[in-house]
Image 1 (cartoon, rainbow, N blue to C red):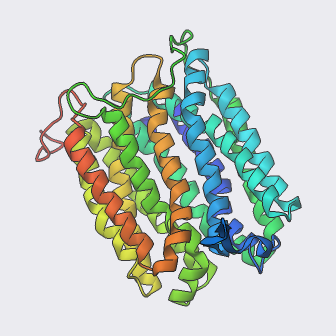
Image 2 (spheres, one colour):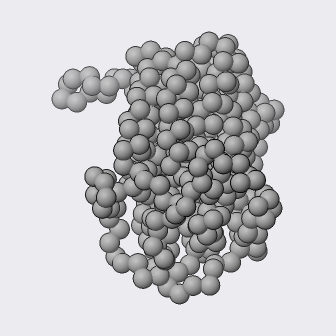
Length: 421
């Protein structure tokens, strides 16, 4: 199967997600610079010791407030996804949910240019969280429904590759736009990304021919497994939370990392994007290989690699070493993401792709929400502390996946097989 043998609708969804991801990833670079003592949104009134019953329990810093703004999007987005995924299952429609979500994401991105109050920034992040919750599970469900067991890993590999191209190169472009043209131009690019995505989906994507899904009212997530202690999709959801935390620890520490490595915002953007560049290179080959050799070996190997790759970032002293650590972390994520989604797709019952796959997309969103908030707090105990905690979470994820997730591909070939076998 060649790259462009992928279903046209999957390619369009991938391109649309790429355009939207460019806009959203801009905010990861722009908002930390927009919020703080030297940005348009002054948070000095909110900083200082936080007291409960006269006892100082926490010191609120600029970094912690930036982390809260970045994380709020992920928390709301994550907790709403099981509901929006289930609603789209019951409606038997995906496209209308995707378009509504893109409209909210784009509108909120443009509104940042008119806001200079931290509380309004939080409100816009919440609005964007709702938009993402409408968009993400429905898009992933469509990709799954347009696949078979023999193409599911490839489909998710292609989709994630384009999405991550946008997410990875967005911060690099954001650093350049912010330095040259300022905040208004950066927010304008975010709006443009959402608009292009909306246009592609509206014109070129249609819902698969299907009847209304027989999804029930229950949106609870199965925890106990039939053959093992934990349900495999739940297990992968928990492991994906850990992976998301490991990736997102980096985002809040922009100013700290720039000072530590004596670098500019452009180099920070390159370091941030190194994870995604690795995903762009490896996502499709790994996704395609998981259709041939099985899902589980890649997932296990990915979490094993995530442990040292995350820890190494806490001990990087040059931009080159940080880029190298981030790139290796990206290889680990590439080995986990598409095969994990393929496992969930393999196990999803007909008409329930949205609710089943939302467990993983929710987990990733929750992890990327916890990560910035955790690093903003943990960095007070030393620069390496957030990354040490992240690597410990990766160990937990590895143990869970190794013990609780079985192979779902019906007839995987042995890894020593060659294409000519």
